[in-house]
Amino acid sequence: MSEEFKIEIVNPEKSFLVKEDVVEVVVPAFEGEMGILKDHISIISFLKPGIIKVFSKSGDENYYVEDGIIEFKNNNLSILTSTIISVADLDKSKQGDLLKKAESEASKSEISDQAKYLADQKVEVLRSIN
Amino acid sequence: MASLDDLKKRIASVKSTQKITKAMKMVAAAKLRRAQESAERGRPYSDKMNNIILNLSNGISDKENAPKLLSGTGENKVHLCVVMTSDRGLCGGFNSNIIKKAKSYFSKILNEGKQLKIITVGSKGNDQLKRVYGDKIIENISFKESKNANYFDAGKVGRIIIEKFEAGEFDICTIFYNQFKNVITQLPQAQQIIPLNNEEDHNNSDESYEFEPDEDEILSNLLPKNISTQIFKAMLENSASEQGSRMSAMDNATRNAGEMVDKLTIEYNRSRQAAITKELIEIISGAESL
Image (tube, rainbow over the protein chains, first blue to last red):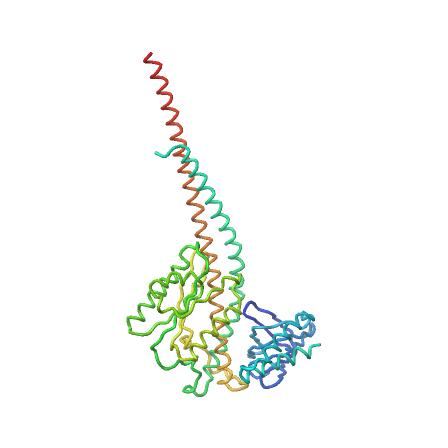
């Protein structure tokens, strides 16, 4: 029996990635990282800033996301996100820009605890990519 | 009768207008293709979002404490209408169709004795509405600088709406936009986004999901995003409709200009011949009288 399932990542502008031969996906869910294999129970969750790791027969890929929702059903994984960048495309300057933006966001004083936590997460993840 | 010189000038001016409308039509056609593509590419996101929310609201345990964005404030007094139009004119009935739809909705609400608040997106809508409903317009947003509809702008509009909702400024929110059907037909739409209208509750609710964290928390996180998504969808549909509408309007204008040039040319030739005939008659009758 094959161990593969389908993944679809969409952002508001387009369908970002569709793959049929995925073996495992690790997503940064809100309450901790979550690995999804075939025949996972149907689940809905949302994401915090982090790295989505996609392991497939045709190669592994990493994506940086800032937010999103995932839905897994009948071996179909849908990820909706407004900001997604492939780590391979994330060069030094782009990463620096994002990091600067996240840092300034995190240093704002008037934001709520949750927003602060999310901004801190962004900073941490972006630093760790190096 | 206009003199030959006048006719000549008019023909030239109609011809140059025709050139402009022809160019505008080509530009609109090129933009239309892009706008249509992005409208089509944007659909999976909003469809999936809708689907997830539907599943979530079916699974929600405690309907009483459901987030207000989903269930509404329980009142029906203050209506907020978001009228989305274009920033540019010369696009046929595009803007007036939305305004017409919106105006009939406004008068319905006002007749029922409810309070009305309006947000206009796009300057053309604001221009047309401010004469009659000027005191009702609480905000006017325009994205003249951004070339294409983008999610960032939609997020801005969404945030404004949610802020106002949380401040208790309105109970029900409806957005007005043109849905793109094809180049000739655009359907003005009124879509209620707060509270969410779950009329099509045909979903297979026996589908059980695991939620992490719980439903309420996901919903309260998801619903604001859904507002922005719906607005974004409306913006994409609108921009495709705008270009389609402009294209057909400019096509008509080009054709009309062509007809006008033909008519004027005939008139020009006739009066030229008439002038020649007149001169001949004068010469002949002059010669005869000698």
